Image (cartoon, rainbow, N blue to C red; front, side, top):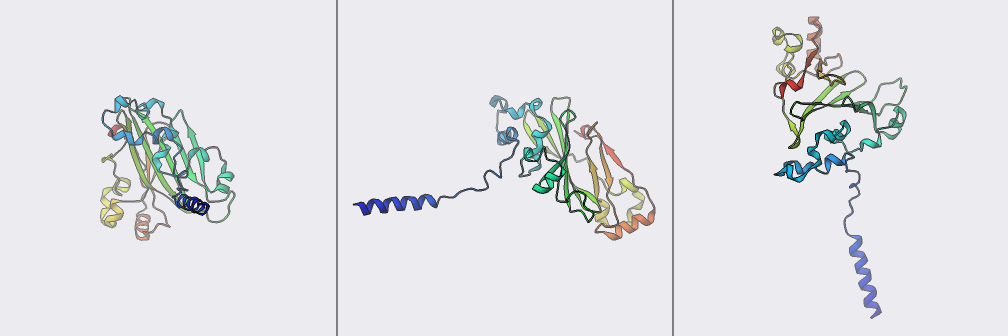
Amino acid sequence: MKTGVILSIFCLLISCSNEPINKNESENQMVETKAVEYAKITETENLETLQNPILDVDSFSITDYYYLFGLKVEFNSFKDLDYLQAYKKKTFFVHSLNYKKAFLSFQTQHTPPNWDGDAETEMFYQITYWNLRDKSRLIALCSTVRTWVAEQSDSILFYIHDKKGINNIQLNSLAWDLGKFIGQQYEPFFDKDIWENPPILIYLPEEGKEIEVHLAFDEYMDNQKAYMVLDSLKIEPLQLKFDPTKYY
């Protein structure tokens, strides 16, 4: 009898130890719980009847939109770190956080302070929003790759926050070929791919509505032929500016 009880307890312990444990569960949680908790409800019918906090645009600050970057690092975990602390923790460093002007910029911090050698490649992030007349918000996010010799933006995304929730939108009017920077008459001098998709550097505004777009040609770029052609033309590329609220 005692032997049977002991065997039963032993089997129970074995079965419990085999249950899966999600060690990454806490790591995958976003700090912006107000937005994330209700993100799935944005596609639900009769949203207004749910009294969903994600519909209350005015209750959101700029940091509540941080989760849109899809980064699995809590914002509060690096929000107050200085340059050296961010480097030691191998996390992000905040450049600018302005709640009133609705602007946030931060970057990875792999390069040590006062470093004389080649800097590590860093990712730089910017986010801002503008309040629209219909009481909705247009949100802009931009990510940029920074190396020790060059910078190039690799994405710019737009979202609308309104009574339907927070949803990605496409501003199809926003496209930049090389001709918009140097003039369309030079198209025969460049390959089609570089002409239609030139490297650019984007700056979101901390004040106002105008986004700046710069041509990101440099002597270290992969397409050396394109750089040498532009350099030989002795042209000073234009810096483009646009107000995205006019396209929505």
